[in-house]
Each structure stands twice: as C-alpha cells, then as structure tokens.
Length: 306
View 1 (cartoon, rainbow, N blue to C red):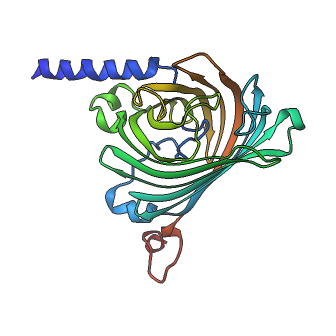
View 2: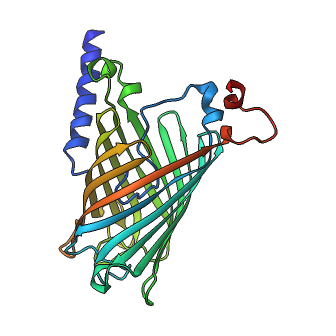
View 3: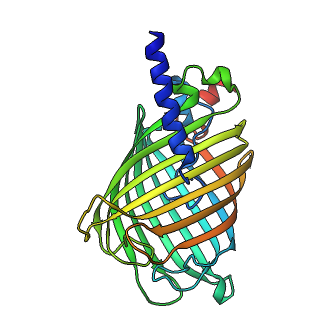
C-alpha cells in the first residue's frame, strides 16, 4: 500500500513539475473568459444560493513594453491599451454557464486612445467532476479601418486538478495556499480564417492547452501561467503544433479587484517567422449578483437568515 502511495505521489509530483517548468492565465489575455478558481468551495446545499444571475468584471490594461504585438487582426500597428468586459450567467446552478467577452485594443502608433480592434466571444461552458467543457464562437475585427476579420467556433474539453481538494496531504503541508492545474484539447470545427501562426499563415484546426495557478498567499498573491498550442488544418500533419502562445504573470488581489503584471509571447514552431510579445499591467474589478440576492417571489436562503 505504501509502495502504491509512493508511486502515485511520484507521478503527481512529476506532472506538477512538467506544468510549472513549462513557460505558462487566467487573468492574462483571458482566452477562456473564466476567472481563477476560488479557494472557497460552497457546500452542495448552498449551490443554488451561490448561482450567479449576472457576474463578470471590467478590465483595463496598458502594454508597458510592446515591440511586436499587433493592434489589428491583419498584424498592423502595436497594441497600446486593452479594455475588456466579461459577463456571465449560470443557466443550471454552476454546472452550465453562458458568458461573453469583449476585448478592445488601441494602437500606440495612433495615439493610444482610439480603438483599433474588437474581439467578441460568446460561449457556453460547464463543469462535471474533474472535467470542464466549452463551446465557443469568436470574431476578431478591426474598428478604425477595413481589413482582415478572423472568426471561428470551437469545442474544448479539459481535465482539472485542484490541490486543496484532490491531494489529501496538501492542506497539511500548505494550509493557506492552493494549486490549480488543467490541461486538455479542442477542435476548431468552424474556421473561416483564424490563422495557425502569428504571421497569419495557415488555418488553425486543433488547440492544446495547459494552465496552472499557484496561490502564494491566501488567494491574494497568485502566480499563473498558460500554454496554447495550435495546429494547421492545411499542413501535412494536422496534429503537429505550428504555434505556441505562452503567458506567465503575477496577480495581487484585494477584495473584488486585482492588479496583475504578465508577459506573453506567441511564436511559430514549424518554421521561422514573426514572434509577437509584450509586457502588460492590468487592473480588473469584478462583480457578482447571485440569484439568491433577488426575490423571485419566494424566500431565498439569504432572506430566511435575515
């Protein structure tokens, strides 16, 4: 039995090391529009009260150093600022959620203020046991001129490990910290012209993702990272990655707000070409109106306690 436990511990530590050593979001470019997992896990009987009627956040950021990250889908300009609105509502408890993201970018070569790109995302997402799924449509379009518009629809499935729940001894070793890891794959089943490399060549077919966030101190200081890999549906090997996007960042949180510093680099893998990268600072303020806070003609658990 002890031998079996040691073997499992070794496998878990190896998996953790691989993820942490990879140049690895959530609050980076918000590719999934989902927040970092909370340390607080509500009891099953309280889930209805915790259901979100409308939740989300407002985000604004400045690309403090940006030598090459483009301000439009056609790779013109350089991003100066980013503004984002995320909205979500729980359709069935917290297992099925509808959300939308709207990212707006400005061009630092054109005065920093005027918006140059709008990326709109609409998605259904859900969770069951240790698995998460997402069905999403995204459209990226220029705002200040004509040009390339990219759009796609995809499905993504990931498996998640949360140390505070899934590793029995974690809470004994780190009583005030948590670790979350997820990884999985997706299929861009509809792709008008969402490219497979940063230089706008090829068309993406498959997506491989990995994410980790390390709670350094009571969910107030969080180190996080993301890896996104894309394959080319027009290439000879449609399963071989052609682009690597990676992000690493540090977030400091206070109540409903968060200040983060993060670095992203997008690069081709199967050939030379354009590498896009930047360093950004961003502020996020979140909000959440739960269904338990609204009187729908019947007493809520919160109302009963008042």
